[in-house]
Length: 186
Image (cartoon, rainbow, N blue to C red; front, side, top):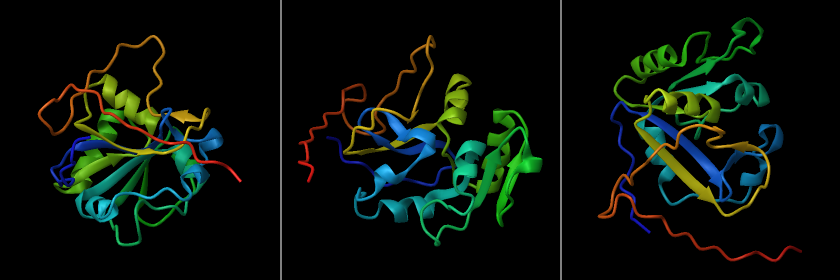
């Protein structure tokens, strides 16, 4: 596996997700309980606290838990929620509800990020941004679990494949090898 360089604040649009091995970023009903007991590499949360200037999410994720905030209480950036019905959204400090085109939401979010990254935490918004070529990077943390159902990272039946390259390493188009062992339940 390639060694990852630390995340950098570079004013980029970043899709950022923890994902199950079978490609889900949330369980059925946007549930996130499947991440209980999953740990990240040392320092990863601090990296994103430092490099994230603003977050863009969708209404489904917001309605699931309007009190949730990304990372830790140390992160102080702006949150934008893209919705067709901002008038019925649950308000919160530091949260702005947008009813606009996704490209305009990115423009607003990047301006608020003030040179740091805009993180997109919605697979639906992410898909729309990918279709328009408005994503700079995808950051994934693959969790050692198979969900079998839920919200996929990228769901675009009949769509055109989106080609990617590794952000580092001598083989930018090589597969990433992942090996897991099954955990006995009980």
